[in-house]
Length: 307
Image (cartoon, rainbow, N blue to C red; front, side, top):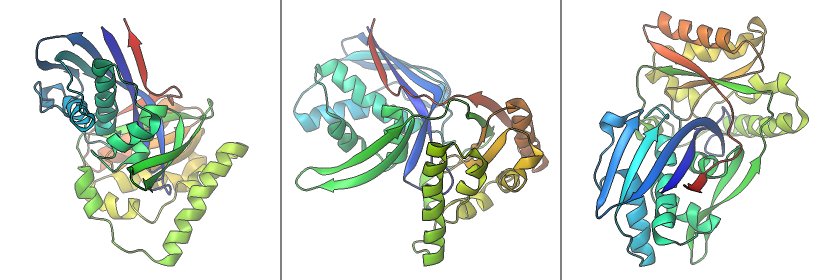
């Protein structure tokens, strides 16, 4: 039996829209057992909505890659246990895609290169800032590139995350569809907004290098996606306002929308439960139930172990 472990991810990180993601210590775990046909046995988050047949995304990815490479793969029973909430901006589909590629490698005996893994994964979704950290772990800057004659892939730089900065997730009791939330974004932006985001995306990388954590809240400010998405989600705007008053919450560095939402993510060095309680309270005031959890950054990325 082979066991595959893929971390969740948060993307955008405020101003770093479509460019930067972070792997989190919530996991999609897949156990592969020999079988005559294909079957998925789901458990955990979203199990009641996860197909148990060949329409499952993990199996679709594995079989599609086999077709593309002319390598038919045999049957398998996949026991899939997920800690990653669906449609909450935590990279559930990216984790499933990386898991599907790993299932293909296991069943075929092939070892794909990193460029191949990224190239195939981009056939199924365009969110390189989720796909890359789910594969590599840590903080990853990801750029989609077109390679002449080889289609799309990514160039990435992985960075270790500072261990003293932890994550508090506040997960509202509603979903936000990534495709729909992409649709609310403007097709064009002003030069001043583009410069605003470039400056803060750069600032995030610099402050991590120099441990200037006092600049976190400024680096998370954004004009490209958050202002257009939060009107579609009650309470998120109030949580985001915590960036204006970080001094009122000891340990809080900054807050952002995770991916396309609905999860809100806080970066902090202490008082995690209190910060989570404040985020929940702000959503509750808007009539939204939520839960908060404390997680670490996963610096390892994908794990594949024979058992």
